[in-house]
Length: 184
Image (cartoon, rainbow, N blue to C red; front, side):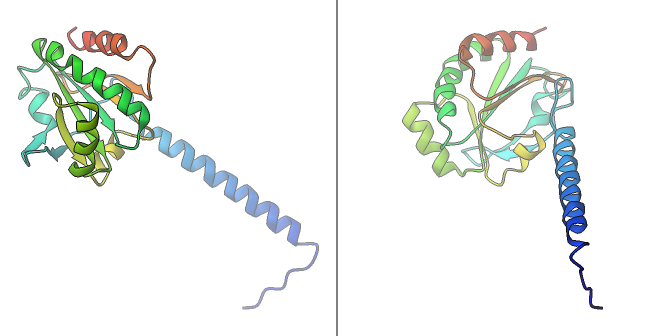
């Protein structure tokens, strides 16, 4: 089939294409927003290898299996993220305090392997949290990671209690406050 466009039909076709493109943009925008993780959602279950090749299962720390855990703080980061380099040492300094209250701290290198992760963590002297690698970004996708850092607070019941997207100025105070909510 051959199609011939006349001069009068071109503006209508261009206008129709613009409207179609605009509609697709709205669909993509709203579809991705509907998959975002929200407070009170069940935390998506996952398993990832830690730095000693042991598999970390989120389910071991929530629900019936997580009897000894009051909650988890999960932080997604990357070595190229400057705000992450400011936030991780603060989180590292609070690990022992949170551990004494039954709260586990887990940091996940988003789309990075352990070589890059440890290069950065050694540089900023972070060594206390459970360290995981989400090299393919599959867990980050489940959690709706769009920017870094991203910190999720998960209660012992497996429900998301709070989410911090991006860097905050009073991060130590905010982390303590939100961690305290895990104990309620």
